[in-house]
Length: 80
Image 1 (cartoon, rainbow, N blue to C red):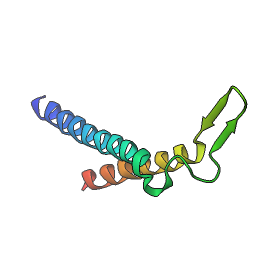
Image 2: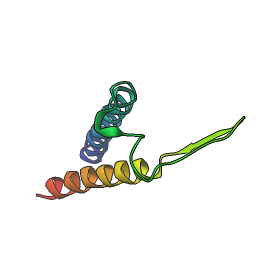
Image 3: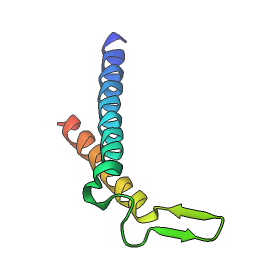
Image 4: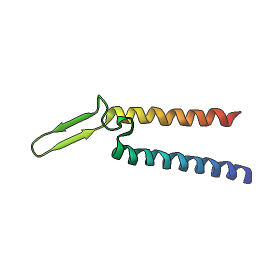
């Protein structure tokens, strides 16, 4: 039972580090525009007189693919 809790602890620490890294990339990306995050072709932006709407759909798809790849690699290497 203690081995299982140690494994869960390791997974939670790794998950926390990944989330911290993603948060820092997003914070710094908005300042320095790394990789053009938030301004990719396909992101929806509408500006009216008194209303503006922005939905970064392509950015969301790209980040989702990246996170999926990271978790897949983590699971692949943890099996061996």
